[in-house]
Structures are given as C-alpha cells and as structure tokens.
Length: 345
Image 1: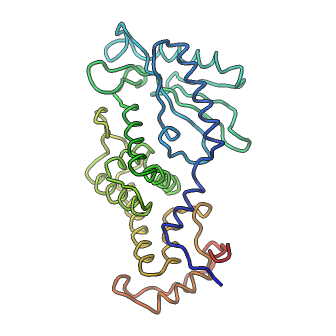
Image 2: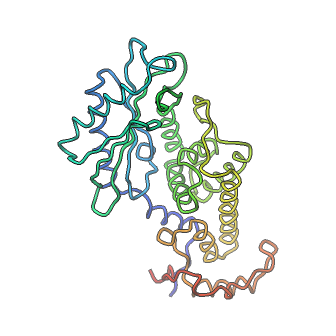
Image 3: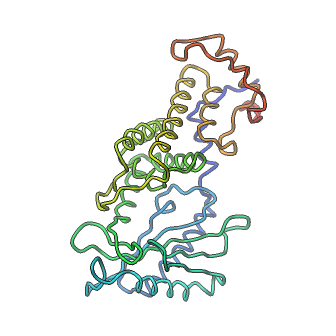
C-alpha cells in the first residue's frame, strides 16, 4: 500500500536536516575557535572575546568551513580609534600571537591581514575531514566605543562602528523565543540564497529576519513571513543595522531589481506550494517547493509517476483558486528528476 504523501511542512523539515552542520564539524570548529581565543588573550591581557557568525548563531550549514570571532582589546590610554591610531599594530600583534600559539598544531597555518578590509584571515590548510574545503577563521580586533553603543572595528586603516556582540545576543534571544525555529529558518533561507544567485549576504538575511516577526511553530509560515517582509523592506531601501549602531546599511550583492526579482519568484513558488498543499495536492506542492530551493540533493522533485497521477487528478478538478490548470502530464519526463516516491522509502 502506498503511504500518503507528506505535507510540505514535513518535507521541509526533512530537507533542513540534510543541510545542517554535523556535531563532528561543530566540535572541531569550536576547538579551533577556542584555540584562537586563547592565543588572543595571551597577547592582550584584560581583553574580552566574542563569538559571532553561523556557529555562534546556531544556523551553520554543512560543510562547515569557517568560524568568526573577535577580541575587544583593552585600551586604557585611549590610543586607538577614529582620529587616533588605526588597527594595523593591533592586527600585527594578534596575527603573531595566533601564529605562535597554533603553529605546532597546524604546521601549514597561513595568516593574512594586510590590505584586508576588516578581519585577520586564518587559513588552517587542514580541513575538518578529508574531502572538505580548507577551514578558515575570520578574526576581528576591536575596541570599545566609550562614548556610544557598540564597538569600533577595522575598516582598512581606520575604524567603523558596529555591534557584533549585540547582534549575537539578539539572535540568541530570537532562537530562544521561537524554540530554534528562527535558526532553522535562517538555515533554509541561506541555502535557498546560495542555490539561487547568492544575491544577499548572510547578515542581510539575518537582519531582515530579526525585524520580520518570525514566531515559533511552522517553518513554512516562518519562511512566508520572511519573504513578505524582505520584499517590502528592500523595496524601500537597503537594510539598516538591527542594533541601530552602524550608520551604514547592508549592501546588496546584486542590483535591487535582481534581488527583488529572485525574492518575488521564490515567494510566489512558496505561496503556490501552500495553496496546493491545503487543496489536497501535496505532490504538486512539493514540486513547487523543490523548484524554489533548486537543489535536488536537499529537496528532490517528486517521482514522475507521482506527478503524473496527481497532475491528472488536479486537471480533472479545476478550481477558482488555481483557474484552469495546465495538464501536468505534458511535462517531459526528462525535465523531472527521477526519485523514489515517499511510499517506497
């Protein structure tokens, strides 16, 4: 007996487990991150460190290839900051300390910071496991902004205002409030973005999500909420810092027209998937969802036989919601990725 086809909420929950970081990857990333933090504390006694990025925010994807952290350097004499000394000397000290403390463990370590906009880039040249890309770390040397909220972080030879510690707190609160639905939604959106032009940076996705009003419960609902808000927000302009510290909006990675076009296309497919699912056509709904994510390894197109069967039923039952449907059997078999039906798994 063929089992009933699952709802799109069930399908997307299975799909997100295929892209989430593994415990092995997390453990190794945290080990390397801690080693860097310890090295920085040796170089800068009395300072504090912070973690940010996907590992700290709980939304890392597999394969995991990097970590992010910063050291807030104690500056009791007020030597550094806008109009004073730039970050170069601090970056030099930090890079030397990391090289000195980690070189015995990671013999092929490479560290780059000259000419970079913000971070010290650490290339471990030692993947977490064979077959993965090299593992890297981005390290920020920062100082407290004693006259306002947030920190000063490098911008080439000068400084910018930012609030990475506040950002991590805000995301942790969102994860707790939604019982991890926020992080799972971000993971899905990051993967969608990666597979569909990569027109938004990860921080833009998260910043929009912090203001979108995502609640706990359904991942499908959370994604719909995000797409609706992202489209409305980006129509009005670039995304502002959710901590209201940085005076510069988050830059898009493509033209606004291209970004909005991809967002609207994905939102339309998601809405159609919801309508089909609610109308009792879960196979066709899953097809829309698969087309949206554009990754057959993460979310495969349903089996062609299932599409033909449900397409015929759909065609025989036109509705006001969908109008006169196109006969799904007209879809060439070559256009559909052949996979087993859910009842065969």
